[in-house]
Each structure stands twice: as C-alpha cells, then as structure tokens.
Image (cartoon, rainbow, N blue to C red):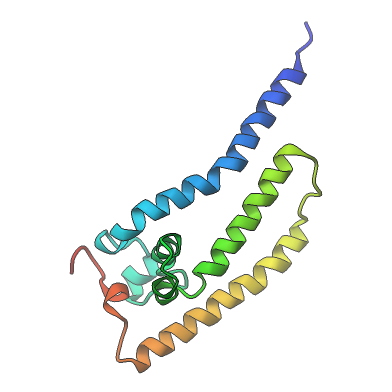
Length: 151
C-alpha cells in the first residue's frame, strides 16, 4: 500500500510556516513581559557567577525589553547592541517567513560563518569597551554586579 506523502508534506510545511511566523512575536512578547522583572530574578550567566563580570550579552534581555517599551536610552544603557540585535532577529524572521511560503535560496554554511565572525567580533569589542568603561567609572554598575538573588 503506497504512502500518501503529499498530505504529510503539506502538513509539515504548514507546521514549519506556523513556526516561522510565530517564533519572533512569541519571543518578543515574552521579553516585553519578562524584562521588568529580569533584574529581580536569579543570575543565570555562568561567566557572571564564576568570574564576577558581565558576559558579552549581559543586559540584552533587559535592553530588548526596554526597546519594546519604547525606551531607547535605557535600552542603550543595558546593552548598546539591543537595537541591532532586534533588527537582525527581524531579518532572520522575515527570511524564515518568506522561506515558509515560497522557495528561497538556502544560506550556505560558508556565508553563515562569514556573517557570524563579524557579529561575534562586534559583541566582543563592545564587551571589552563596556568592561573598560565600568572600570573607569569605579566598578560594575549595580544592575550588572548583583551575583545572587536580591544581594
């Protein structure tokens, strides 16, 4: 008895389309709701727990949350790369939505690596600059220095 692969292919394409469309709005809604409470929760960053310094992405969730609330200056203070990160996420989301509905050229691993290296380099440069600025200002700001619950 032959399998009907047509309907299962359509069903899986439909699930992929739903996932491609839904992931960013769900993520951003979660960030918008969670961000005001992020500073009151436990520290989950291994570098911050072990080394006592903020990691390259420290403050990104709060920065994105502030950005989604329209507070650009506060977002910048939490993480200067929150706006470019949001733009990149929207670009990836748009590509995924487009790919869910029509054939698009797949991204080659070489291109992905070529794009990842400068992005990671920028994050590292911003991280080093932030650590240097924190040191010049007399230490890590309280919103980044709290190592445990409420401490």
